[in-house]
Every structure is written in C-alpha cells, then in structure tokens.
Length: 229
Image (cartoon, rainbow, N blue to C red):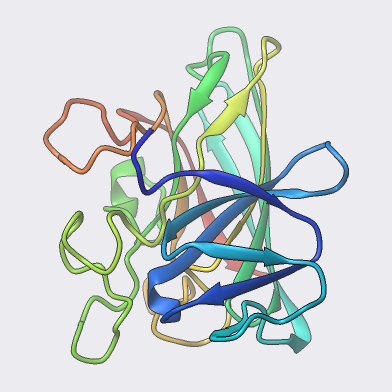
C-alpha cells in the first residue's frame, strides 16, 4: 500500500489541519461500532470528540439547504447494479453502490477498481474516456490534477476505493469523497459532458506509473451514466 494511503476510524467530529486542497478524504463505513474508515490523501486528519484544535478548521462546512441526489444504472455483460450519490454537506459526497454478476460475468470474487470517468457515455464503455479530474485549468482550479502523479495529489479526482465482490458475485461499496461535487463548481461531475462510473476487471493497484500493465484496473467490464434525480 502506498505511503499516502492509510486508514483510521472516526466517530463524530473531524478537524483537518492545513490547506484543504491537501486534505482530500475518501472513506467507507464499516460494521464495527458505526465508525468510519477513512482513506486520507495528503495532510493528516486529526480526530477529535468535541474539542476544536488550534490551527484546525472543521472538515464539514455545514449542511446544504436541500440534499442533492444523483443516480447511475450500471450494466455490463452479465452485470447489473445501481449507484446512488448524495451531497448533504458542502464538499462531501456519499456514494452507495451495489452490483450483481452472473457466474459467467467478469465480476469475479475479490476486488475490482471503480472510478468516476470524465464523460457520461457508455456506448461503448470507451466513450466514458479517462478518469474524472474536474476542471484541469490549474490557473483557476487549485485542486486540478493536471498530470497524474504530479498534480495536487497523486491520483485522479474520480478515483475511489476498490469494490469488494463476494463468492456469490455480489459487490457493494459505501464510501465518502471530498474530491468531487454534485453541486455546481470546478469539480462537479455534472459538467457539460456529464460523468459515468466504470467498473474494471481487476483492482486498482494505486501505482503512479500509468504504463504499469493493468495497474488502474485493466479492462472495463461495466458502465453507468450518472444522472441527476
């Protein structure tokens, strides 16, 4: 596992120290005490119960007036599923995804890479183009990842945790990301050409070298266009 990727558990309040652009967070709920495992990219996150820490600011900016909801119907050969995205707090998008695969599908037991891709088109899967990176004009977007591995953080804004698939070929992911938004902004996935989920045959190795064979997940096996609800 890369040094930039590590987990911890939080129960209530999270305070992020330093510039927010170096404190992107992706997390996943588990079944142990209602806490949340978080994958942290960049600046360390300090966990606190109730006491604010000097030099830190609350990670959550506050609830939005009306929670935003988007959905994707995901399909591929022998694969069906849905993803729901919720933006209830500014800068925080919750993703719930479930997939089912037949015995003949390539949704095999184990881990599979899942990413948000930059175009809302699945006909064919290659039409979704590359991993989503928001508005990549660094002059106006300080969070732009202009070059993978050399930008604000090591990898793309649309990169998520690997999807876990059980022996019955049922897969699920419950994660939170601060890298993209449903609301308007430089990193909204509802831009002019939309966005889509892509499921890959293999897991994401989180390697910085894009030439490493199958490192980002290999062939695309399912796709789903993300639409507003």
